[in-house]
Amino acid sequence: MGLEEKLPSGFLLTTVEQVAGWARKSSVWPATFGLACCAIEMMAAGDPRHDFSRWGMERASATPRQADLMIVAGRVSQKMAPVLRQIYDQMTEPKWVIAMGVCASSGGMFNNYAVVQGVDHIVPVDIYLPGCPPRPEMLLDAILKLHDKIQNTKLGPQRRKQIQELEEAKRRRLPLLGQQGAI
Amino acid sequence: MGLTDFLNPVKGFGVAFHQMFTKSETVQYPEVKKPTAPRFHGRHQLNRWPDGLEKCVGCELCAWACPADAIYVEGADNTETERYSPGERYGRVYQINYLRCILCGLCIEACPTRALTMTNEYELADDSRESLIYTKDMLLAPLREGMEQPPHPMRLGETEEDYYRLGLAGAEEAPASPSQDGGRRSSIDAAVRAESGEKK
Image (cartoon, rainbow over all chains, first blue to last red; front, side, top):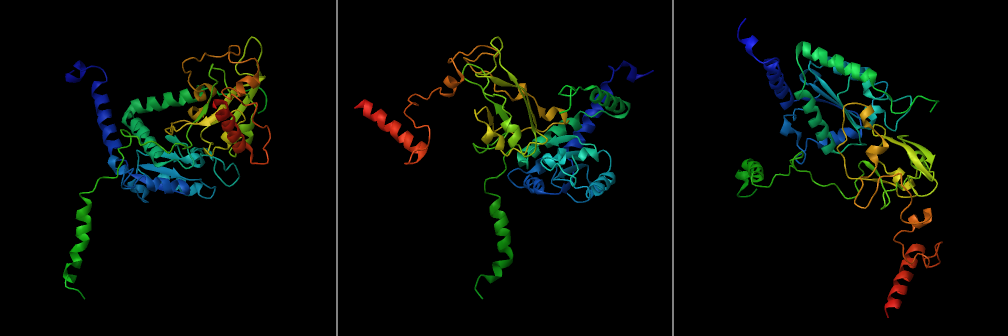
């Protein structure tokens, strides 16, 4: 009818997405979920040498309602799991999760009944960060990779489509090992 | 009680003011990467012999040493037509799960052929569990000049042992077992003595 029909397809929305992504990534407020030794490295990421306030992240808080990034740092015990989920639920959308360290990512060397074998059993994880514990630079690298992801997040129906595509791709991915025999 | 006590309330500001003229400690991380300590335990690497053959013999000692069960190895036999490593066996499947690996280096200590070592690379974060299981092609060292993509026959010697003794000239003089004077050190001393004796 008017101007919007003359615009190249998708032009307006992608620009809005980019602006929204830029705004979101420029000041991610972390809800620190420090559980073990990884938390020490997470604190070190805020020190003068590494200084994650360069990306507007210095407001690392224990208040989930004011945060949009949960950094799960350390092994999550079965008893801590419902607490972690509650903290996650209290955070406002949009929200992201970094599983920091091998214990949070997959249970790491604690392959036993007391430890949750990866926080992705409880909350959706955006970035897995290996290391035991990862050095602060590794955390900064993970945060930058998350920034990339936030920047390229789509909005509205496009986002729903993106999620569907990702799910489909995950479902169709083949295992690294063939399924012959028990391992 | 001193004469300058009245300055005490502002002395603290002096400390803060002084800091404005000191050099900033911040490393501008993604642009400036400060090198790690040389022995930093980073991502693993599967090394090669100078002709491109793999050093890994598929013995699985690394997998046995691993406290987190992060390594999966499947060995296979070398054949005359298809040779990947000097000797009998090679690692056909080699996977390290970096979501389990705690980078402790016990696998490095266990490796009998120094096939597995660690690099200083640490930027490993990724967004899925699958992509953090590193397979053999991701772990293998790149081919340097003079190296050739296996499979190919042994170029640097007739046997496995020739490879292990590469660059070990005069290894025959070295005692196989630690001597009374203190093993390796004394054998090196003996080698040095033999060499200087030759020069004379």
